[in-house]
Length: 477
Image 1 (spheres, rainbow, N blue to C red):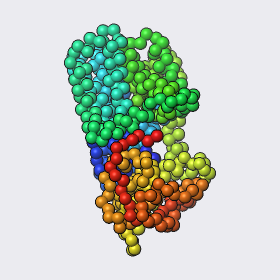
Image 2 (tube, one colour):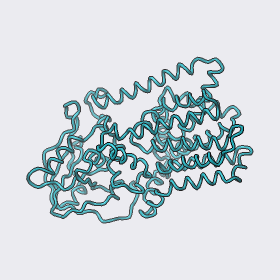
Image 3 (tube, rainbow, N blue to C red):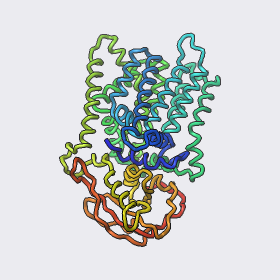
Image 4 (cartoon, rainbow, N blue to C red):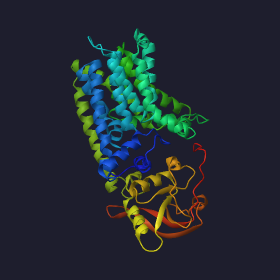
């Protein structure tokens, strides 16, 4: 399957490398650039490969965490749970998203903190495990701002668990905090030199919307159930409820605090009327997987047979769902060619890019750049074009395209302005052609699937582009 919208955007803006990016800390962009550098191309499977390998490590780390806290069967079941969920096993485990490095860093942090906070008899290496926890938090901080929930959850555990607060008098937690700050340093430095743009952009998404309606809350809860998958979500809810209802052990308390905070906070944001994307809670469900695994192991020890049946059927159903998703994107069978068709977002723009590259090298007025009217379309173009042509976005909301260096062009240079043709045939908005002194309509380009045209891209020859001045960032409404 080709890159989705967010994946293509991450690949497109990864170069040139930066200490920070508007949307997230740099890990996802660095990893996508690494995949491209390793293989010399932007083949989706190869660019995704580092993220798949990271999720393999995530699975192992969460299994080890469950094994340490609750026994080996619990570790096995925690691996089953996190691989059976859609938001972890499918998207977080394979796609070019910040969730990949976030999850592996969080899993490393959970493993280290579990060994440090709940040591086994004879284990005297607490300081080393605190350093491991801090390293995991540093990786998570390099990946997504959600990493703040890791130290928050650990601190909540230390303050609320009997005798655990004594650990704050040892150097371990403070060593972990210092190591974690190293991971946060690149994003902090980039923000400090860019008007705190990323912090303000992400912070604005969590502010109350100004008027309460039930829709965001229903969407947040329903979205989480859907992303977890209907055959997995009830078992997760059952496992967490059983844990909280009973007298939880120190290990249970640690993971419930670490995993419960992001789920509760983001659901609480929806209570304020702000739309919350369901996958924002993925970190929480990852950290809760050993807790659910412990309950499944407990039920199995009591003689119940349903955990084995549920695990086998859930993993099979999730794998089948992934295959259906890929086949729907590649063939379009789910919509039969009818619109709206969300699978179009996962089609590549390779043919469009090939046509634009041909214009660059063909006779007449060769292209010096390509412009488009939306950051999503800029991502699709950038992922397809690679280094062939610079891509600029002419829109108020340009995301990280706003912070990329403008190509060194003369006003006489010729470019192409492209946009995905709207279904209603609306003409170009005045703001989209304002930066150009000349605009000439050219024949449309086609996006094809299995030989059939499924969407069209409008193409214009433009001249006299005036780059926007360097401005102070303002979060888009």
